[in-house]
Image (cartoon, rainbow, N blue to C red; front, side):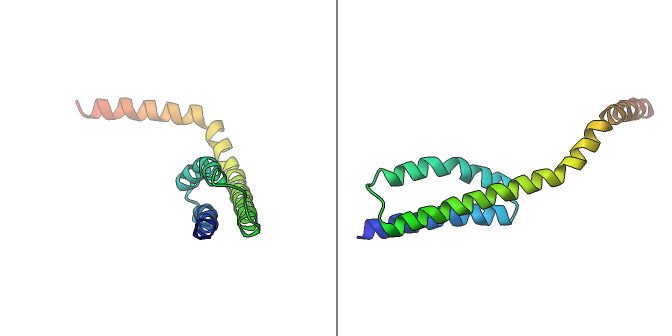
Length: 109
């Protein structure tokens, strides 16, 4: 029975890491954990059939993953206006950078 408890605890841990990374907006950590989730779930599934408690824990992981994905989508939507502004002003920034580089090179001579 320790195996089942360990598997349930591992599922809870996987979901909590996703939830924590999303709440902290730690996108690097969230990405790492999201990529590690499928192999971890496959390894846990290979241990045998899921019992009722494990299925409930697995469902919680799914909900936590979905919630994290919604959090990422909202953050991406919030960044879109700034990204659009950057795309719109890209040529001006490049010209400014080239001008500044030329001027700093001339002033150093």
